[in-house]
Image (cartoon, rainbow, N blue to C red; front, side):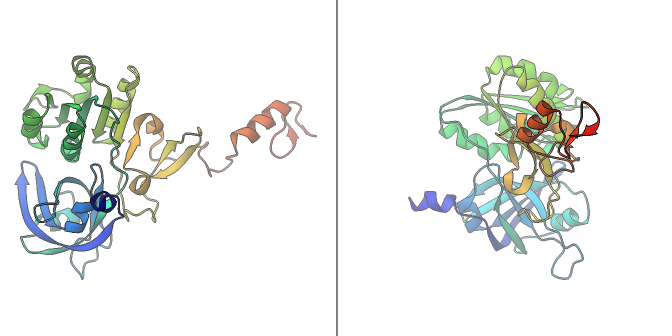
Length: 315
């Protein structure tokens, strides 16, 4: 009982000691000793790290999906990243025994099926990193696991060997053909769905990839659990920089925070074509009003201002 309660506890901010930093093809994998985070982790969650040291001008933390945890082996937490700018370059230069300010685990994890199912795990680039801890949990529930991994080139496919070793099947695609089949992973999605008899899809990667997966899966009525890749500044729901339009169970679109309400969303509820915008019909947008009120206005022919829209004069 204690272990279950601890696993569901909230995030913590700790001083994590760097155990290793290693190159993995085009990426880096960093392992931290952070027992309190490891004990609370569920697949799909992420951490944020302060970068640059105590005197840095880089004030914003960086968010990274958790790749692996080892609660029973020192409480380690591993994440994977690519060097994109000053912050990640600084991280890549850390060495063993350096101490970092880390907060986690954050966000909504992947939901697990109640009954054994055929699960297809799709990753783009190092977006595949959080899928392997998920695969372990799914196997514990008797699920069959198939992988579909893709990237621009072979050195940017993360976890291909592990996928081949642990999955029932593992399909690899690269845009340049340097590993697996040439093309995008979505090019083979129909084929994999048929061959694997997929019941549910879990995906993490670039937003256009997640959009296409959701569209294709919708043709087969296969649910998609998508871990979105949105830029996050605070990671705890305060700054509102990671919002995206999501349709709620009540049919209303809300600008939803990826960091606390995600990063995992049901694919069909994300308005992928409107990401980066505030749709006119989103809750709180200028001119927004409840559907019931709009319907009443339409039925009577009156707008919210009392104007008779059918005759062009005030009632």
